[in-house]
Image (tube, rainbow, N blue to C red):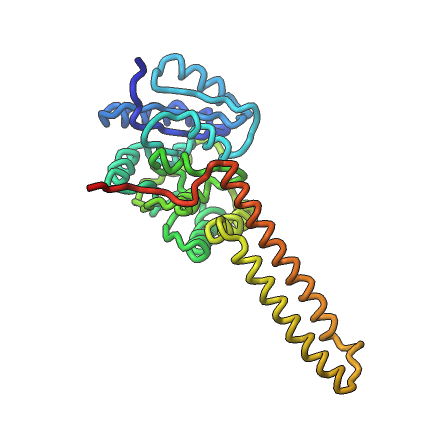
Length: 316
C-alpha cells in the first residue's frame, strides 16, 4: 500500500545543473525534520546543460524524488503545470530551482496555509537582485497588477507559494500565466495571503529573466484582467461598449436628420462619417458580446466547470 503524501514540492528546472544537488539536499534536510510525508517533483523543462543527467542520478538514491523530463523547453508555466498534475500531496509548494528561494521557509508557508487559507505567497521583502533590471521593473509591475486586478499582494513574481490541492485542480494553466497564479486563484474564490520569506543571491548560472519580459507581463496582465472581471459575463464589456457606440451614433444621426430637414447639406460633414463608423462598430461590439456569451456557455458546459464554488456546508 502506497504511503499517503501530505506535501508535494514542485520545482521547475531549466539549466540549473549546479544548483540542483544543493537545493535537493536543503529540501530533504528541512522536510525530513518537519515530520510530514512529502515528495519532491523536479520538472526538467528541456534544459540544454546536464540537468537531466543530474536529476537521473539523484533519483536513484532519494526515494522522495520524482523527476519529469519534458521533451523540449515549453516554458515555466507548462513545467509547473506538469509538476502540479503529477503531484499527489494535499498541499503543494512551488519553489524556484536556482537556490534563491530558501527551503527553510516551506514549513512557514504551510503553517500559514493551515490557518485557513487556500494560497500563501512568499514576499521577497529583502530581494537580492539587480536594481535596474530586476527590482525596479518588478516594483512597477507589482503596483500595476494590484491596481488592475484588485488582488493586493506585494510580490506576485515570487515562485515560493503553498497551495491547497483543490485550488490548483480548479485552475487551468496555459501561456505564461504562472506569474498570475494568485489572480487565477482569486477567480476561483481562494483565500489568499502572503508572508515575508528569505531571498538569496544567485550562486550559479545566469538569471532567466530580464527587463525584456515587461512586454509579456503587460500582455498577460490584460488577459488576466479580462478573465478576472468578465470570465462569466463577456457581454458586460462588449455589450456596454456596443450600446454606448450605438447610442452615440443614434444621437448624431438624429441631429444630422434634423439639419437635413431644415435644408442644410450634410453630405460633406465629418459627423456623418463618424455616425456611420461608430454605428457599425457598435453593432459589431454587441455581436462580439453575444458570441462571447455563447462561447463561455459552451466552455463551462463542455468542461463541466461550475459557475460557483462551495467552501463548506452546514446541516443541522
